[in-house]
Image 1 (tube, helix red, strand yellow):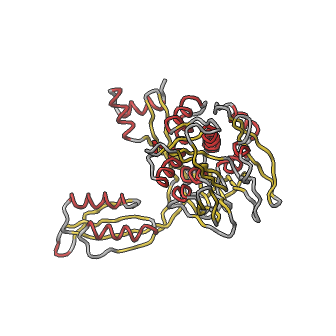
Image 2 (tube, helix red, strand yellow):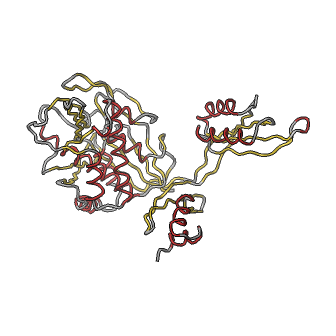
Image 3 (cartoon, helix red, strand yellow):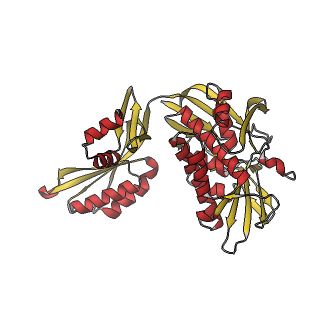
Length: 431
């Protein structure tokens, strides 16, 4: 199984992820040329070799109107480019938030400020991505999904609707560039699984005009919810909102590097120097077929209706159960009953037990541990002449299976007034 492992021991940022992943493609120079022909307005990608703590890797620069955005600001040292977010309040005052790697600067500005920046909201971002970029639809969908994560985080942190967040022109192009590059690279590499280490966010505080922000910055912290992360001794902001959003969107699971046969390694370098090499490391290779530990929770009931059992099963699936199934059994005093069995991950055991007790009449639950052999699964979205159709791809142990999503197949069959089998043939052979 093709596996991509991301070592985020020095955090995550859009340009560092781009640089690490670009070292994994066969021809990085050709890929840069392709990026520059995608059609991002006034944007040029450049790459250069650089060294951190004796390790050589790639640094990616994004030029907007011929210059890196942070070159306009001289009083601070920057690690990466910025994202600019304008938060419009109902009083029509503007709070100009510069979001960037390793420094945050907050300053008020009025409608007619000296930089003459134009604004774009999420609708404008959608227009740029959908109508101007020469990219596959899947890549465009991923770009907008990542941007949505960032906008939702800013909306939550600042207490304003997502529709009131407007992106500064230069920062918009810069962020679109980073996100587009990573999304296109992920499409090129097409890993079956993406594993990432816990994310090092840095420590300390960063200064801004209105006070001091903790590390990780509030938007980054919001995006990293439910993702393993840690601080450490390095002072500074190592993980940015863009880097966090890209990880949240693409990573299958977080943990230690799996046992894998590595075929390519990439180092994506930041600008700043720290006691540790300031880079994201990406490793591409093959992992063995998958086996995982699961918990089986079983209980017998003889006084529940079919409707009540069905409702309990729905609640168990909502709580994260891997599978729930029932078997008719004979119980005490020759009563017919039902054996309810629930499979779950070990970390979900306690919450699943509570659901079973809450929604069934059982007074006891049996627990057993088991190993489960599984095929790796992923959902692909196909663009057909009849609309988008999702399919589930399962592979491992020498087999590969493809199954189209029933709802999509039935919708196509209804629209074309054909059978399910005919709909499947149309997808597989549109000619």
